[in-house]
Image 1 (cartoon, rainbow over the protein chains, first blue to last red):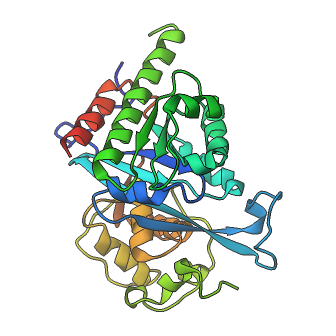
Image 2: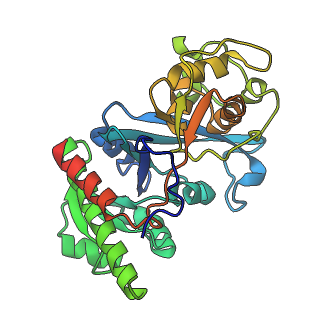
Amino acid sequence: MDYGHSERPAGARVLPTALKVLVAGGFGAGKTTLVGAVSESRPLRTEEVLTETGIGVDDLSGVERKNTTTVAMDFGRITISNDLVLYVFGTPGQDRFWFLWDELAVGALGAVVLADTRRLADCFPSIDYFEGRGTPFVVAVNCFEGARRFGLDEVRTALDLDPDVPLLLCDARQRESGRNVLITLLEHAMKTRDSRRRAAGGR
Amino acid sequence: MAGEDDPADEQWVDDHAGPVVRPYAVTRGRARPVTGSFDLISLVTATRTNAVEEAGLGPEHVAIVALTQRMQSVAEVAARLDLPVGTVRVLLGDLVARDLVRVQEPREPAGANDESIYEAVINGLRAL
């Protein structure tokens, strides 16, 4: 199957493609650290200025008497080739910005959920979110110094993770380790996509 | 109001930020771009080597043209100019309308029958 409308003029260069993956997890789980470890330069920060009408109504504590609020998103860039760029976005930590997550999740190849074993419950909302959306994800347990180490089996049980979801240890500060997490995610995303196609009756 | 303990606000007053201007002042009150939707990872490339300030173009427009001599995503443009994404979308709409930048919307990976994209990314990451 070809791309629908490939009527570009002969000799046109290959159009550049931008892809993205997300890094989610509870506050302080190391999202920005991981983004910084894998990206080619220090993480960048974008801000969305939101008006209150755009924000979930359940918890506005802290923004009283403010009719706009700013949500920051940290992200990094990995240039794969001249025409292929991968962006890694840290999701805004505040759970009330789900609609921003929706914007980020559209078209994302997949997501990394960073878990901190000291506050394992903090990553439940992220897991629920990606499960609900059908976004392929992996769970990476960030090994903080001084944190009690749990076996991966214990973590999997505690998170009630689907057996298909990859679960791995990582050190979000280490480039090598972060890269390994991304590769695991991409492999999982590819596999997920294949099996969904087969389930849908192939082509 | 935002306090001094907010590092995001402090960025507004560093050397690169230029004048502190409310986002809507930069867009002259406009909240939506005249054209385009501009995903965070839409790739922006200038079509000219520079743009001069002319009627309807402000210093931020000119800065975007300068910045996108090398292809950048919408998110990068916003981050590097220290402007909110919504503001940058409006400015990009102006630039697209004047044909000063070209925007490549991201391809939907699930829609494309393109195994090779995943493989290219995986191989690229391994080679880093």
